[in-house]
Length: 217
Image (cartoon, rainbow, N blue to C red; front, side):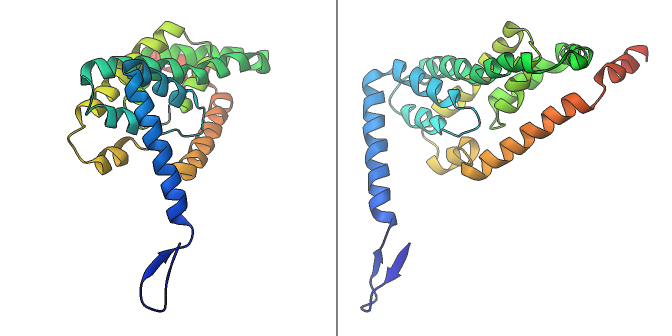
């Protein structure tokens, strides 16, 4: 927030101190990660991806580190950390399976059969793009979908994403932010609403009938 003094000069009331503090923290974090090297890339990606629903823009850190480290090795470290972190959502859904009654057992089995057909492509795309991964991994855990079948395409997608970010160090920082940056609280709200709708579809649609019809065609 800014106001204009009587002499026409512009002064900051609130933003400048906060911006200075935020900038200082980011500088210290980045300096610390530079000291850790590829381990730092792994850790920041792991912590960033561990956040379920709430956004942590670790992708911008990977983008910035691309100017100082080998992009390929950086992508390997960050991709591993990010893929491992995303499975916090998978484990959350896996633990929530006991809350689902036997009434939906056949329906969930049918959804797993659908994912056996198309799941790897969907998982790869969610991992590669800014699509909220938790929208997919929480339901996959709930379905008790195969860990390896979910992790391998996720790892490939995250590696590809981090490779793009690392090799894009010479491009504009703003372009990387728009492509892979977090959407703030609006993104949190949208992710939450979409997650609710996905769960509603899981339990409202009779997938076993749909799958049975497609098998008979």
